[in-house]
Image (cartoon, rainbow, N blue to C red):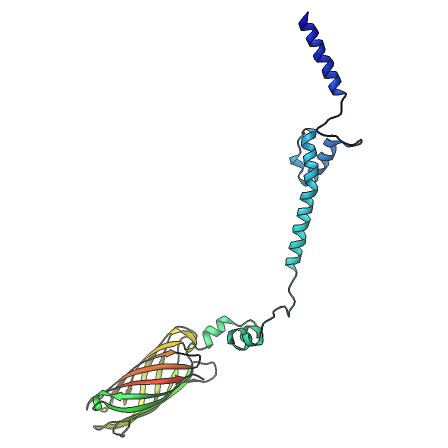
Amino acid sequence: MYQKLFGAAIVCLGCWGQSLPSIANPAPGNFQPQSEFRQAVTAENPTDWHPTTPYTLRLVRTTLPLANRGSNLVAQITQSQAQPLPNNSIDLSPELINGSPVLQKWLKGIPDVLDDIKNDPSFRTRVKVGYSQYPSTGQSGGFNLAVDDVFFGRSGLSVSANYDSVFNGSRSAYGVDAQYYLLPLGGYINVTPLVGFRHLQTDKYSRDGLNLGVKLMLVPSRGGGADIALSQSWVGLGSNTETGLTTLSVGYAITNNLRLSTDIQQQNAKENYDSRVGFGVEWMP
């Protein structure tokens, strides 16, 4: 008896609940959740639509416009970033441009880096003035003058000249040599034959003649920053008066145009073995 009354009460409450409006989703009059949700999702991805409850549908309807706004915003930003910059968009001070040779070169146009490596020398022309010490000539003092690697255009051909002498004139040497570098000038290592003329004067002999040899260049810092040169040549090669010259030179830049340098030379003749040590300042034009 009580069970029948309790069941009838549940049925009545269920019928009354269906007649009430939904509190979780108070939809407007002509709102059709599933149909509008189906259209919205189908426009994005037709395979993502699934039936859902009215409450979930309400959340989806409120987030879809935000997603559309976000995609529109991303599209606008992408379009603005893709627009090319005007030609005069680089605003640099004249002081910065004048103080940077590299920047000046790039502002004129994109350089051919491969051509620079092949033809732009990693070491520069050098004009040297210095002091010389002659250990084999009673530790006599003297001076030395030199011009190294005067290039002809952007070719590997260059000319060097030097002169050194003891202050009292008892020993001196001078000469001119032509070099043709065999490897790309922009590299960190290079080699060249030497062909020139040299005069040698000591208190024991005097001779001059054709100077033939080879020179090795090592460039740890391009642009004249630092380099090491080792050369071996012979005056009067194959003759009875053949004299060998071995020279090691090292230079290190202290400013953009000034360097400190030192060189050690051994002069080997049948009459005597002579040596010289030089210290100098180099200017790079």
